[in-house]
Length: 381
Image 1 (cartoon, rainbow, N blue to C red):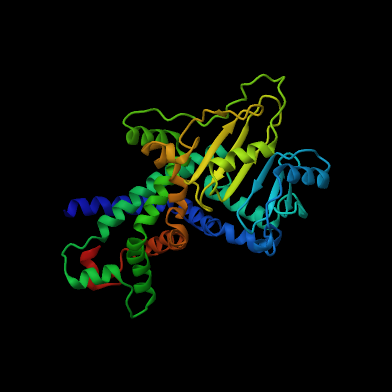
Image 2: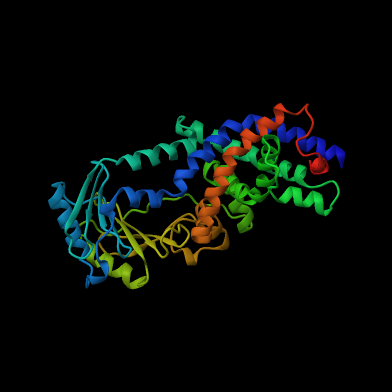
């Protein structure tokens, strides 16, 4: 048992020092991303609509497209977002980086946003650091992905070191609670040891789900294991298959078709075809803030026939296999959205304390030759 603990201690120290910078950056940049919805709504009041309950009906989708084109002079937008209740509809022009926000009931233009706001630029900067450390995308993604794998080892070896040598009330209490006196040495040890234990599972889930996005071989392996050996399909955009001589179906007809199939949907995101080959792409959000409870559908732009979707992210989420749902749920798990707002709060706190673990671990390593700060808990380390 002592040999196992010694190996775990050595791995925990070496790998922890090697990945300290990456873990600190990833955790710190995760903090504003965890509350990006609230930051965006607070800094961009034009996204909300006054007195939505007094409105009788939603404006036709075609009228929203028409008013957006009139406000910009650039024709039909790239995408149209409608819902939820109380939110402005928005028409996005991707090439021009312009978004038109409109009252969803009257189609009145509320705000024309040119380029990104300061909040959006800040969140994009945080996302770049979180996903690839502001390095070239392919290089940074691999660095973050492999660092997440190493951090899994750090967390597991930390759990081994946390386990008391002898199970008694005193050792268990010191391993689970922050206790006075609040000296700097004692606080440093407790923040690393005690808080590391309480946030072990959230940090472990964040590392594992982060690897799904950063390392394709890992996501394919997880899918194959969960599906009994099936190969995960790539996400592709199917083209329209009808005769190009046929007239294009109206966006109103598409809206009515999708809304009829999903009357309780809280938000619809419609990507409009840019040429005669592209299909309508529709994201149907059944619960705001959830990426899992979302359908990603494709329709022929002329006949509105539904086209086959690929990958775990395509199609209706309820129709997916258990393996599809597992992969589809990774972002919800990563951000804690799988547990609604309590889960988001948990992941926010996990990121906050996760950013302190490399610092407290480094301080403890510097004091490795000194007398332990918590003599009574010597057996727990």
